[in-house]
Length: 403
Image 1 (tube, rainbow, N blue to C red):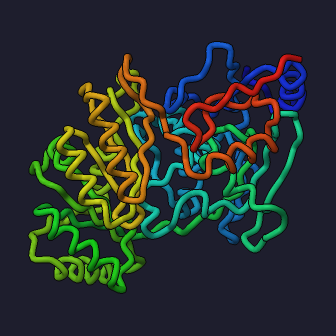
Image 2 (cartoon, helix red, strand yellow; image 1 turned 120 degrees about the vertical axis):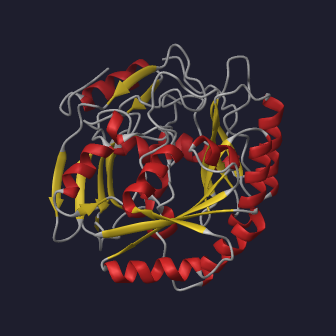
């Protein structure tokens, strides 16, 4: 189902009357991620809701429909010297998707999945850049939260509630976000060596007055796949309005460690980041794709355990959030053991893709499972939206009532 903006309300009302299960879909580039959808679950695609409704360069705000492709929005903002401080999600390669129509995903999809890349180190996540949202509930009720200006605190904070909800609470139709000026000068450093020395460098950076755009852990298998030495690495990206200040920052970072470092231009940093995002998203999916989150102090241990399984893993040093993947069919028991390690480190592991025959749950039951189910009932009493995809609930009960 691909409704126009005018057709959308009537279509949602019809689905509600029928009691049909359905899933909100952006550009369908990552629809296979996470818990499987039932064969009877209808797909409601909002790729025709792709307009930029308002861009106010002076106020650094933009309002877009939720089906707008991230890469296309970034191109429009770049023409005004601005950008959204967010990573394209795993599997994105701008050169392989020149029109920004699929690989980068839709903005609504990014919010619904709660994706956060390495730029969170300096700019926080996409959910923190939201200033307004428009949504449609499963019964067709339209609601708004926030507004189109930065200083707006009206209403409930539905924006954060929907971020990471996997389409299980409502259909996002419109987003207002803060934009930022694009830094004129960028550079970086790549540092490889023993994990304990890299951890000391990461800690030193976090305690310094420096504000890197990103500090990303790379596992040895990922570094090797990118043509580097097969050893753990830190990829550090810096930005400044002055070229001389940028050089001073690079020197200050290098002075924090006894390890040798490789200076990178902004273009070289971007090339490595594309490798870290898994390259182009094609029909050739990895056997395993995992989202990992731990307390930042646990990053080196997770990298070590992931590397022992042969996983390519990148992890934000400041946020403890990242992605891991492998083209090889790792035993499910090894992935489950890694999940247990993440939980022991105060974190989590979400299975986004897995080989056929593996039956790991995408996410286990969370301590707040009861609260999450109560929120779900308030938004979607019939359980029509994205059945089986309520985060924090391993196997939600089927709630769709016969009508």
